Amino acid sequence: MKRIIIPVDFSKYSEYALETGAALAKQYDAELIVMHMLELSESIFSASSSARNEETAFMLMVTNKNFEEFLDKPYLEGVNVTPLIKNHKVLKEVAEVAGHEKADLIVMGSRGHSDHDGIFTGSNTEKVVRYSDTPVLVVKSKPNTVNYSNIVLGCDFKEESIPATKNALELLNELAEKVTLLHVNLPNLSFMSTDEINEQTSEFLKLAQLEDKGLNIAYAADHSVEDGVLNHARRENANAVAIITHGRTGLSHFFGGSISEDLVNHSRLPVVTFKL
Image 1 (tube, rainbow, N blue to C red):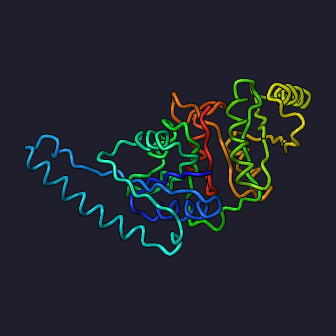
Image 2: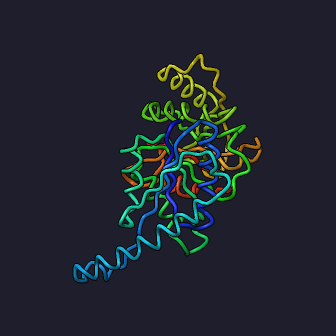
């Protein structure tokens, strides 16, 4: 891991992301690119050229001052930090910058849907993930550690998920001591017998050439995939959960519906997302 993007809005949630990113940067000797999107008022676009230039210059001055204060943190000592200001609040720019910089990870703070201040609410976090081909780590609180002992990755063990699952395992095995691939068995039409689950899992591992990798495989039965992943993580004392997203429809997970959105917004654990 050589380059990490941290989008910030100077809120406490951004600081959680910054501190997480700093710890990862120290662990992997990585560069932090700390990115802020300048929130220009709608009126500026209809103003005269001189007025537009004056307001932009003023906002840049204020933002630079806020940036300098925000980055004055003892945990950033010894970390290679590059501040970056974008001139518009377009969230897909985060993914574009990550791609341009060949970043290995985006770290974002998010408050879910519980509050209304700042820009990184749950819905905006979802927008970043929607556009991002780079894995996104979403944190909700001040980090206790980035040395994760156990991460649970929800997996449907379907052939189309193989590339994303292998990419996810590559990063997660670097972050965690133990990664568990979890299949959640659902009632009604999604229900599978034990033999059916075992057969599908074996075929998946064979096609993915993961048969001899000593992977940790687990099964859980629950009323929803979100409940299954979070309950299994709680039972196993996991430090984080991981999901795979579908870029064309935001956080529409291969399990269907809004499961990924629910996990990102409701999990108190860190969530790592990967695009299918």
